[in-house]
Length: 250
Length: 340
Image 1: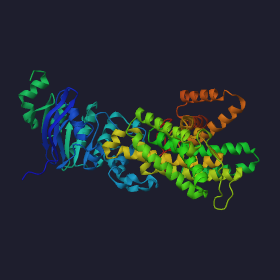
Image 2: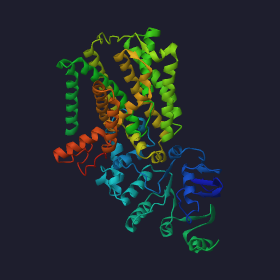
Image 3: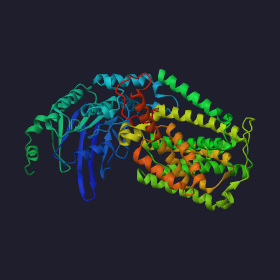
Image 4: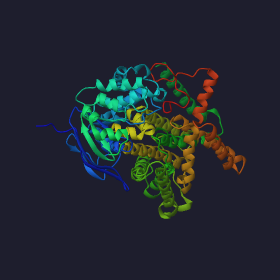
């Protein structure tokens, strides 16, 4: 018996007016899998990502998270069911401290978020947990800095940390190495590789080498459709994929 | 920890000093203006929770202020409910109930459309007060109600009522400070900065905005109740767009996201508008010029000016780290709104 997929997408179609951004996309990601989604610009990667995360409503099709249909749920409900995401352009609270950003991630799914009379400083365990997580990526010394004082690479690390801190069942990464220097990109790669096996990761990337390095299965999108699906080796050798990426006509 | 103790001592000293004002032999006129400052300060600080901490600009604050005031007048003149605490309870509950409905409507919009809806809602309440003559007295408003004694203390005198308003102000300030320093307060600030991120983290952005909207209205209701007793007259002007803009200007003038700033803003607006209106009939023109100057040259308001002045005088940036936090790399001006 095959285990229930962590994420299942069936017949997902998204239309913006007459433009069909996604055209009947179906795939399933099993628990613990690392899946890459690639494709040239305009292939529909970001639309697919935002539809799974709940920012875009599909015109047709369904999305299941751990067997539960989430197609019409708002993003915050999906988060409470175990989905976490990063944003392509870093989206942190710039005027809040680094540690406060992490605390917000930790508190998001706990009842403490409604508590409005006792000071935050009373919840030492929340803060200690945030500092531990920051220490793990070497940012604990800058915990009290406002986020906007961090470098681009560091902000990227915090961005991913916010998603990881929730120990999600499904982690969606939107171009995690976008705009990063090679050194910072490899830090991010290392961060992902050492993450526990039980977390399912779906990542969208432009950088093929990065994708092949971290994932075990790759789905290729082109003009809103899946054109190939396989292991990195299979995809590398796939004729259609080569054509797409080398600019040939499909 | 020392800074916290210092701030606490400073605050207590300021409160004692403020309580002594009526005994200093000042003309009653100034004591009255300060009373008005405390009252509008409550409404402005409440609005700051919404504008400065949650990032929502609302034009409905006067409607809630006026609703609190009208309810007091109506309860006393038409329903013979004179006792202070029950009347306060009913008036604030009524205001909060109105906000609970208005919040649902206004939060259907975001950004500019939210602002426009709040503006329209304020006009609806104003129109109701203006035209529902049997209930509100229309343009004439409502008079003929009194300041009841509270816990046996007679509040009819200027000094006694001044101290009473000061006490309520301090209670409201303490409550608001607790709210902004709580986990809930941090969530509001996160929503101010990056609503989409907060939604993705699992926060229902709309629910938190709604809560902030209703809480802010509650404070406006309390202020309105005090204002009704202060003025012993309630009219449509108290919930007009003019009043809404005035409360908003107090917040912006003082410095958004600072709580104490809007209180300072309330003082400036109350004193300057009264002083100028004694000098010239064109006082609104001068007041307008002052507002524009603040918006052009000191967008972080009086609190921002104070901070920069303090830095220039002391020569040090002044470590404003959180209690127990390391004193390092102090943020640049205006960086740490909400932690004043």
